[in-house]
Length: 139
Image (cartoon, rainbow, N blue to C red; front, side, top):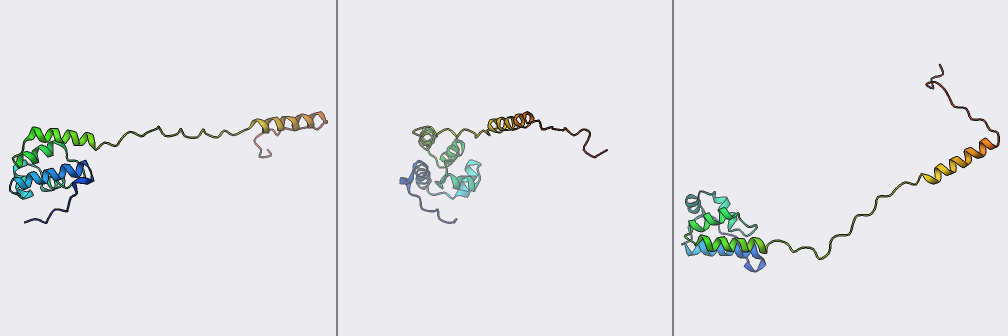
């Protein structure tokens, strides 16, 4: 006999409620071991155990294999799976998130105008500017 399943509260949400239903189906089938269900369904013990674990919704294929291995109605469970999948989706946000702040732009205009003013004032005062020539090595 394997270890006991962890307690599951179906009122905590749609996935827990779905898993509780799978556990009830297994119990109604005579509580076969997960090893026996794995043999019947061609899925691993871990996959089937996780399907009834209530942490996440199993795939539809795993669900149907679990149900058929327990002698349940596949079409009924297909419908239940789709309803659960739709119900577990998070609701759309009430309002879109605010836009990101605009990127800051550097302001070079004042610097350029200030430099032009200083340059013009210096040239107007008769100052001479020399521009170095060559590669700056002194040769």
